[in-house]
Length: 543
Ligand code: FAD
Image 1: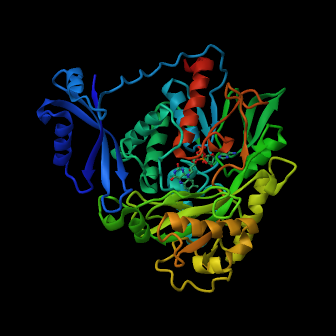
Image 2: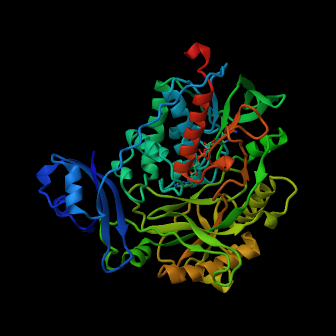
Image 3: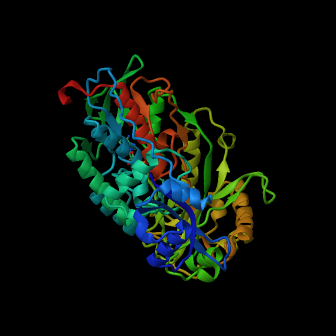
């Protein structure tokens, strides 16, 4: 048994001794009666700008009768902890499996599916179009330096998937007991331990690269096979059943079970799936641009007089303008906020500019950036097939490339010019160095966005300024364009996780429309793997 204490409120500059005193106060007991304690959650309460505090949730064991203590205190903040749910052992299924499971994609979804399978004795084969994280890192730095893009090894593709060159935010809207499992695997692979209790955990790209490398080693130790530079170019389907996958238009690997975890940017693969008759569906999208502010401005808006407090780190924000708000029938929102980060060139196709954001664990760049996007419904790009959304996004990414002047330079515009409807000719008044590499071209972003999106973004900037002081400063910078907030299609699956029309094909993660973000993609990969384990025996030669 254990006791859970909620609502321990402490100043941001508190010491460990202050935490102990606060626990003693809540328990009305000396700390020497505490056998063991663990921080479950630490969140920041910054609602009152003159009194920003940390709020803790603690679980502890006592040397005395815990029930009696809880009864004596008789306060909702001090409760007996609910017993942890026992981890259910998966019962292996009895259907025969002739070949090792194949996983397409080494993003969070594919990697966590592979880890779960390997933990249960299966030896999955992971096929990844991109390179291992060490070579991928070099390719990306080369792209940012020179504007020479490798279409298989970039911010979207390669070991670790799309989130490797990111802020590594681990916040998620899903609620699932597997989240804990994902966090512990990250920590075992080298993530900072505080992700286990911070309310808004993040890892940073520097840690993510190490973690991805360590996960690979772990997978290989457990018998998994990882093949890089292995683009799946065809699914061999016979009578509605998958029988093999083709790699790089050359070799075929026999397959009975294929987890397809390709992320949101593998458009050529979506085309291949569509051509082969795999059921896919178009879905709503979002388009916009990255907005950069001085980080200090965001810190001041969020933390008031504590803006410079080192304990708080760089502040973030989440902003939403619902449809109908601000005299606009379209919703807009901030997305993937990267405090103290950089705007990154995230293209994966030739001649198209795509932006995104990334931070190191320290979040120390002094520039805050996030996507500012407006929603696009399927009616906006009326198309006859499910790939209409992909064509729509490409059209605007190409415009951005042309407007940037080539070489993957991104079109950018000062916020004051954007609101005034005039092109930017310079970067005067921008109080920071724009972070996008290989560089930006001051211009008029309206030329690369659908008109209704530009209008929505203009209104959103004004509305968001009312919610976050300074957001609407005219000395901020917009860099375009942002098109990869989610997958443009879904690969629908049945209750048994198989594709609606292809037996043996298991769509997973963000690319299939079942996740949005690192954690939910990882959780979805685990769910699919659990189902496979409960359905199939391990291949005979592996038992
Ligand atoms: P992905 O991570 O996209 O992985 C899919 C993998 O499949 C890729 O490695 C790709 O190369 C491979 N692949 C695709 N097609 C094929 C094929 N035909 N053959 C072989 N391999 C193939 N999310 C967060 O939660 N927090 C963040 O801070 C965050 N920041 C981000 C920053 C950036 C720059 C980007 C691009 C994304 C960010 N995201 C973030 C989103 C997050 O990365 C994704 O939600 C997550 O990676 C999805 O996981 P996934 O495994 O489903 O797909």
